[in-house]
Length: 265
Image (cartoon, rainbow, N blue to C red; front, side, top):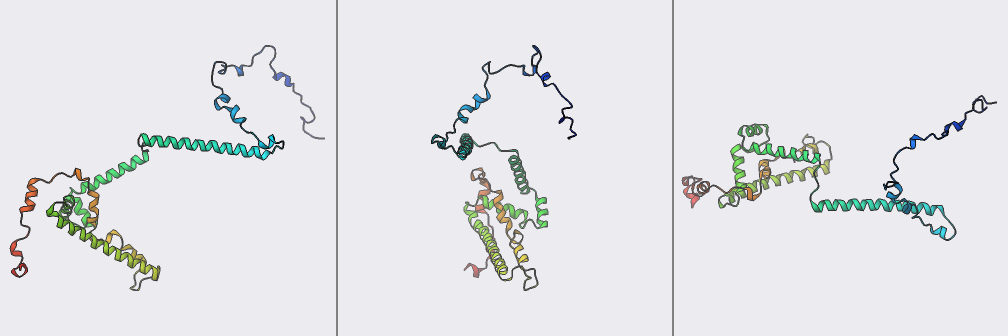
C-alpha cells in the first residue's frame, strides 16, 4: 500500500471553489479591448491567416499525404523570408551610400583623432630644433636639422630649375639605399634556404641576425624616405618668395677659384 496521502485520497479539495460565485467579476480580465476600438490585432498585423494557410501539399492533393513535404515547405518558406530580410537590408545600405557616407563609429573617430595628433607631433618636429637634435642623438634621425629642412624644400619646389639636379641627387641616394636593402634581403633568403636557422659560418646567429639588417635601422638615408610624410597637396604649397627665388639664381654657390685650371679645361 502506498504511503502517499494524495494517492489514498486522504485530502480532498473542492475545485468548484475556484470558479466565480454569483455575479462576482473577474478583475484580471478588466481593461480596454483595443480590437473593439479599431486597434491592430497581432494576427492581422502579421497576416497569420495568409502565412499559416500558405502550405499546399501536392501529395495531399493526390490522395497520399506525406508529412515530410509539410516540413520541406515550412523550412523553405522560412528561408525565403530570411532571404527577403537580407535583400531588404542590402537595399537599405545601398540607399545610405547613395545619399551620403555612413556616419563613422566612435572607435573610428578615436583612431582618426589619434592619427591626427600623431601627424601633428611629426609636423611640429620640423620647427623644434632641440627635439630634432634629441632624436638625432637617439639614432632616430640621420640628417641634421638644416639638412632635413633643405631636403624638404627641394621636395616641395622640385620643379624649379635650380632644384631639379638636387632632387635627382636625393632620388639617387634613395635608390642606393633601396638597392642595398634588396641585396641584403636576397642574401637573407639565400642563407635561410641554405642554412635554415642554424648558426652562421662566421659565428653569428645566421638568418636571425641577417633578417634584422633589412629593417630601416640599417638605412643610411631613411630620412629621405620619410620626407613623403610631410608632403601636402600641390595647391597648398605657397609660391616662392620673389626675393628667395632671385637669391637662388644669382648667388654663387662655389667660388670660381675652387676648380683648378686643369679641371676647367
